[in-house]
Image 1 (cartoon, helix red, strand yellow):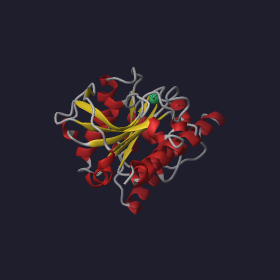
Image 2 (cartoon, protein in one colour):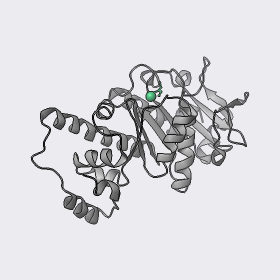
Image 3 (cartoon, protein in one colour):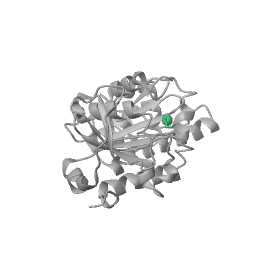
Image 4 (spheres, rainbow, N blue to C red):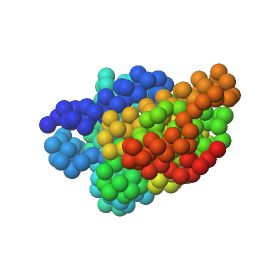
Length: 274
Ligand code: 2HA
Ligand code: ZN
């Protein structure tokens, strides 16, 4: 099978296009990675090429020998559907989990996303945490979430409570809440370590004054998660723009009732935070 005919590649491209349509990917902003299943790589194996290994810039031994589909560094999400082979690539990790090689794509040269250390460290943490279920890490520059990082305290429980309060389905979509990374230099190991620590607990990490990282088992769930978080952030921005007091809201007791009916366990720190 040709690489571009594979369902996971089509789904990857669709997410890039949808994120761009949302306005979350100005210029080369944002990136996406997918940990490819064995049966998926077997379908396209005849198209893969060999080349030299390069350093990842961090260690991810739990992902050794695995294959990933990732966006290219400096590439625009806008262009992914128009010419996938120039904008995305498949990489394979070596047997130590410290090096990668490009085995397909980036046909005019280039490197995987500048945030590769964050993507791989997050994918390693969530692979372990979910017993192999989670395979996607998506980073975008969602406008309203970024705006909130200038006015809310950069605390996990505050962001979780504020976002949850804005949309009834939030506690069901992200019962564990969201984590927040203070402003850090992007692209390196330090921010990757800080983000992956949060991914031990949360499916969402917000980078102050920068954007959001979401993770999940498949493309729709991961995109839906980020979309829900950003929708709540948009409502909160509108509420804060109209008034600094709420006349009514979803109360702590309401959340407890919701959690009981929907059979989810809500993060207690956020529930008790006022
Ligand atoms: O330009 O979003 O964080 C890609 C990015 C870096
Ligand atoms: Zn970014």
